[in-house]
Amino acid sequence: MFNAKAYSVASATSPFEPTTIQRRDPTPHDVQIEILFCGICHSDLHAARSEWSGMPTVYPCVPGHEIVGRVTKVGSAVTRFKTGDLAGVGCLVDSDGTCPECQTHHEQFCPSAVFTYNAPDKHTGKVTYGGYSDSVVVDERFVLRVPSNLDLAGAAPLLCAGITTWSPMRRQGVTQGKKVGVVGLGGLGHMGVKFARALGAHTVVFTTSPAKKEDALRLGAHEVVVSRNANEMAKHAGSFDFILDAVSAEHDVNAYLHLLRRDGNLTLVGAPEKPHPISAFGLIFGNKSLSGSLIGGIRETQEMLDFCGEHGITADVEVIPMQKVDEAYERLLKSDVKYRFSIDMASLKAE
Ligand code: NAP
Ligand code: ZN
Image (tube, rainbow, N blue to C red):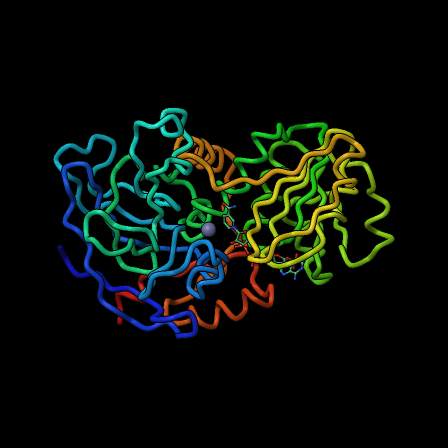
């Protein structure tokens, strides 16, 4: 074991404080990574404040699952990484590798999947600790290659916001000639816009923030709809092939079902605690479907990163020091981030 610097919360209402955590020495299959940047996902906030009753948080909690860094050590059996390589870690750090989900590259649904933080850690007997830290040790099967041409602060959010929006878009066949909506221009939403555009779709952003209109166009949207304006919404009735809903809070999903064309699909990736009331008629009339999507598998995550490397795609980030994480959470709640916070871990090392 060795000591790592980290920031943790002690309860659902505590501010972040500096702490020291124990990381395992790399086993033969492990990669040790010096963390350079870690994105702040809204899921970090949901978890730090224990907002999901189905997944109560074990404290102290060190969030962070959008990790980019450099390999500092590898176990004796590691073949895919060497010291000095760039490396990424997302929401998953382990799975059994043998079940039908793992065999079909859906490790996120493995019954033994281990999430990057707040999950039982078989190595320490405690819970896993995430990327708000100066280092992490991860089985090489869950370490991703980060294209070297990408800005690292902006690449970190690809490990969650990127794959979570990429995966359903690929599954639903987003391509040229399709009309695609993205609801909520936050960390996930702005990646959704970049991907929908890069995949060739006619891309429409739905936002509650009129001030984000210009940004939405700059990010790649062809059109922007202020969702609180009923007239603007009505113009798009029955016209979308696919809508990705990346909203973190309670809102009316039925209004978006109404905008789907026949056989259209609305996929929820946003995860507010309160259930959505869904109109059966909103689905029945038009053979519409409503889906959910959880991050993505490891192979698919690598495909997404490689696509980003080829197309020069990263998140638009506001780089912050670790010490500003509480302030960042408050701003996240006000939808006041363009469009992802990325923590510069040099600030933690300097403490
Ligand atoms: P975020 O950056 O805070 O963005 C959420 C966006 O939702 C905001 O920017 C805002 O966009 C919109 N919004 C916020 N409150 C709203 C309200 N009351 N009514 C309507 N719209 C509202 O969050 P994020 O990091 O992108 O995460 C979004 C959600 O996805 C979270 O619930 C997170 O836990 C979840 N998530 C799910 C997965 C998965 O695997 N399914 C993975 C990662 C995250 P506008 O200002 O444009 O309206
Ligand atoms: Zn996330």
